[in-house]
Image 1 (cartoon, rainbow, N blue to C red):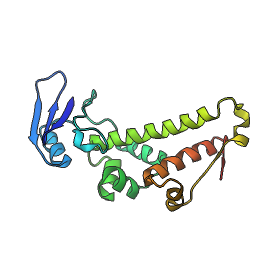
Image 2 (cartoon, rainbow, N blue to C red):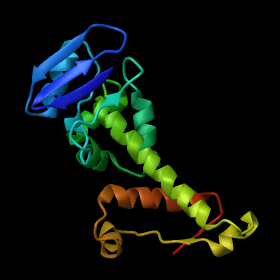
Image 3 (cartoon, rainbow, N blue to C red):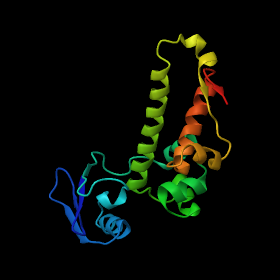
Length: 187
């Protein structure tokens, strides 16, 4: 399935079929709900902040990409609490996020994709740290690797002014992961 938003129109194409949904919409919510009413899972380019206009995603899997337990596991892995995930990732109320995690409501594809992007950011940060330790014997990492663990978002933001609360949580998750494996010291 592909979704594209052009000139205020959200158009959804379902691979292997002639089904399409076309709806003039001003917001991602009306675009998404109109397609859902047509029985089509989709995401249009209006749902992802920072992407260039005309961006197209291909979704090969029909139905939801993740279930509520997977959403909750990712949220906890990223050290986000429900209110942070709801406001900064889903842009919804806490109750809506809890319904998604409990399986009472379907998780929107844009939220699934945003969580996947955050998971990838975490993996990239881990890979970056591991690459910086190349040449250091693994058994000496705990002496050589020191990571900052910021207790408060304000402290993190003072050193990283362009960062968001989600960036702080990802950095905290990475530092905690290395510490838990016994290969880093926290400062």
